[in-house]
Amino acid sequence: MGNIPRGIVIRLVLTTLFWGGTFIAGRFLAQTMPHFVAATLRFCFALLGLQAYLWLGGRRIVWPQRTQWLVMLALGATGIFAYNAGFFAGLGRVPASRAALMVAASPVMTLCAVQWLQRAPWSLQQVTGVLLSFIGAVLVVSRGDPASLLDGAVGLGELYIFAAVVAWVAYTLILRYQTQGMDTLSLTFCSILCGTVLLAIPAGFEWHAAGWPMPSLAAWSAMAYLGLLGTALSFVWYSQAVAMIGAARATQFTNLVPVFGVLLSALLLGEPVSWVSTGGGMLVVAGVMLANRTSSACGRLAARRETR
Image (cartoon, rainbow, N blue to C red; front, side, top):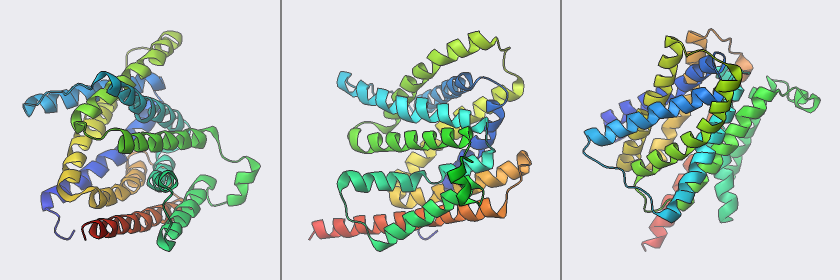
């Protein structure tokens, strides 16, 4: 991995492994308990994990100013509430492997949104990368039969996952343009806090209406995994990697997430993975790598020009 320290490489690979595993844990919870309840408890674990990390490191939460709480609320509404509502609802209807491959398209969708907002010109490689990802996503969603999309073959589960991806893109854009100067860990803690409060409102109605029993030990374990490993620890490690090697190189490791998601789905859930879906996922990952590598190179070139 070039001159990236070995410890950072190991942490980034483990981070993407944990993120890949969220699809398996999410699939299990989506089929065994109310979705909003599962999401709420997941982020309660995440808040506890982040608080423990801050306490062990001798750090305190830097609470946002009054006007900054609107940004926290927007982050919580998109990246926590809306994303997890679509995530769990989708995983209740589609296999974890398909969901992982669909979510892999989010970096390219984010790039398209950033290019549109900045009215930036497109390079040939960026266009090629976006087209590759689009073709791969179509193959995954249509199960290798693009014509079926015109016949309404896409189910509600795919639509929920797509809505989750859109919510994550919105979260990323808010994070990029509205949070300059804020402490990263405190920002994450407060946005998760806002999102958890939003999730708890429908969760209360959901639990009361369904009359569900207390979660099983397996369900508690899945929620702990999602909150502690898939959210708190993964975020800390990823943030540390970004600080040490830069966002451009750290982001490339996220292409491993759908790979781990598919492999774990096959190993732990016994989900069949077709060659068409695998090929489509590889096209998505290749497109993301091509588009982001070009974008990073353009950014470095622009930075060099500014210093002349």
